[in-house]
Length: 444
Image 1 (cartoon, rainbow, N blue to C red):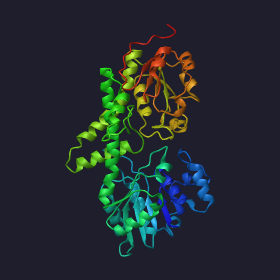
Image 2: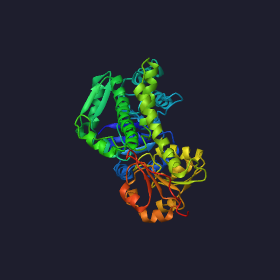
Image 3: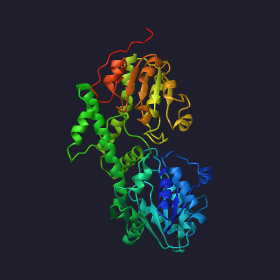
């Protein structure tokens, strides 16, 4: 059993701490947000992640998992101090490291024994060296036996626990191989490939991985837009591409683009780093431009079928989180689409199985409905923004009766377009060779 402190109880920190406890370690999860810690001590989760509350409850009862706001308590016996705080985007896309700095300085102030500081947050290349410098300067003549290891995370929201327990790989970077090997022992029971590199290479692996996945999504979305104009079906195109072992099928689903807390922030940060170091991130810029354009195409489709003016049109939005099985709305396609539609004068009514509470804060101007059918009442069009499972088997005959104008924009290619068109809907998918004229108002 190892003693571990995880600083930050956001998405990455909480999942990391809880899973390490479930592997048999003694873990203190620390956060300066007292309200969040109080709720966690009552087994109230600050995020929605399937299965998380059960694992928290199990490990708290077993005496392996603790939540605190006190650094001296969390770090008292810690052999490993994981920094898992937020690194939000700054004005120019750079990663804001103020929370990393604060956590590092507190470690330097409090710890009085040998410790391995592990960067779990996604941080710019060179941050590991910077963290070591901060600790050394903060300690001054009070020398501290410490090492810094980079251990980037590769967790997907909605399947984060499974991703932690069944990783494709564990990446560890350090200038001291022995320190990286000690961190590797924490993951040994997972029997995953472990790659040990230097600090900067480990930091770059995280950015390069996310940028490449974002690039695949933007690539297939650009192909989808071309398919729309040429009458091809991007779903079959992706299947045909995916059969090539050099390409594969993953991340080739056309839709409304990528969102969430990682891809947008990380692609911006990598592009910013590139510019600062006199390289031209032309591909990364194109990847971001294509992603933004996918949301604008929804408005284009609605204008095409409802008329150039969307003023006072009622648009229903199915799904507000950036992906299924999470309540996270950061950089969600739905949020940008709603803002675009509101700027056009449209009225928005929306439904999401988990994100309504967050939506009340972030989207105060919309009507939040209790189910998909209330959302469809009187709507001139529905936009599927998040492919929650419950949206796969909707009663479309009922929805057809409830809507004022039967227009569907399937932003995730979830539904059977032939069936819906046969029912009388004007249907738009993504990259399905859409050809549609102006929709008729059912009342007229």
